[in-house]
Length: 346
Picture 1 (tube, rainbow, N blue to C red):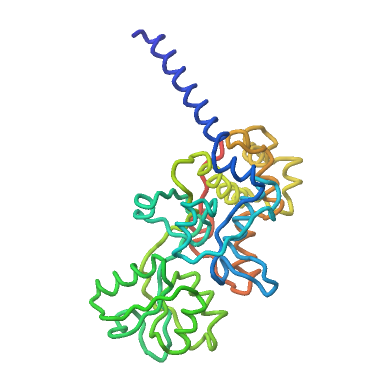
Picture 2 (picture 1 turned 120 degrees about the vertical axis):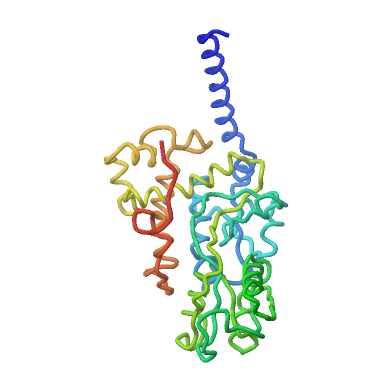
């Protein structure tokens, strides 16, 4: 084959792949279902997972993950309220996703090999990081899990925490009893009543619970052991790559907006006078932000105007604008000493 013929064949193949990619987004089965239904179905919790998925005193859903669901709702349907939050235990979230009872799981969900390869799930880019840790009473006089010999550890059922903690305690040869509960409130009650020597949970959630849900918080401490470093991602069904791209770029747009200094307060000014080409692409001033995903070009602009960027969402749900005052730490942008980053928006 001559160079020219080979180049022509390659060009045809590349064009075909590009067309197939565009069609995949436009024909995403999940996107079409959501648009036809006019409602996005998101995972909730069977109770409150404080700071992330919780119900306030007006019986309204709130939290970091709830706001990410609302951001996705704006991106697809243009209205943050066009979603239904489906209450689910940890154990119920994946069967509910597989059966179509929810369209996406955005609920402090760790990306693991078993879930990725055995449950028919696909994960987004990580949007949060945290690991398993242990809460104990200071009166126990211990600093690490080595001091839990013969103790009782309480944990919520259906999470990765059970296995991570059990594996760690086995590795350091600590005999213990593990007791699991369905609801967060049940674990808190068991711990505060003295039934458990330690409360095992995801570190960021444990810090929030200690600060706001445990009476005499100063009498309790999180042990120094950091048992895992867990990437938290949105979970979707495998086989709908267009839908995965939409969820990924929803998260990426929120992160990229923070990197670029685009906020809910200045987004309209930035749209009127974009300071650089990346901002112009992000806000739909230049075409392409929507068509490649089967959405309108202004979806990210509308989402940021309604929900804010990733930093704003963190601030009001977990940070200084919330009751929890949780330091951002690893969950800050890469440029601010954290590990959160977005792919390149070209």
